[in-house]
Length: 365
Image (tube, rainbow, N blue to C red; front, side, top):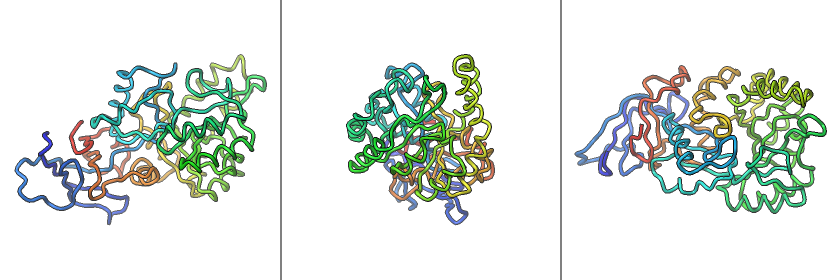
């Protein structure tokens, strides 16, 4: 497909979730979306099916594996795996890798970076995070706010080896000052949180999002809803909790039991959050120990949790792009879209089999 080729996408174009948002066709001209038929186009390629905005993975780690940063060729394969699955916008929720080179590649997904994780000393996965003490938290948040793309990622809780269980990593005053500094610099803040006890302090300190959020309870769900704090449940990652618990049983039985409880109530937790009006978005946590390209599986997990299919679909398309400040299938927007054989609103499992992937106006898959 040359730069002069006009792409004609016809069938059903899902500009939004409602029936009145559906269009019959769109055109891609010079890499951008138009709803006006071009005149004088000689080289036209047609794609038919059900078109959606490129999928969003709002918790993904390109350039990272279970041991830390990976070489560029490995990061490229990760990004390509996401692209082939239809994920064309990624919020990289913390990475020690410098992946800015991806921005120069029009064939790879667009990335919104949260800088490198910021964790308490010896309270996170080795080689992942800046590991600091509370007195240095504000300075590191400022550093990552300047390095990222409008997000900063904290590690809100992790196992305390002396306690033998998950516990909050930061004193209330430290997170208040850190979040205020991020906001002053124009960045939003998110945090890894598995357990219950860090959530109130983080939300009352002004956090914008919580990753995983398995520790939500009847006491904190209303607080999240009142403050408009989003969650990214990463249910495909939470599915690994029983195996993690089995592996830590002999050394940390209290932690293992806690992880099993969080896993057992995961669907109820997500449904309670959704029912309360908490914004819920799709994220997979790919790039640690999980494979890339799992956005469709995460959407299916949200449906299993009880979120209506169209709302689960919105959590990886229209609503997710709006939340991240990126366009969907808007007039003049970059043509990042995925085409399917059937209506994904009727059955989200359709997302697992894209018919065509279009990135920056080019058919790439």
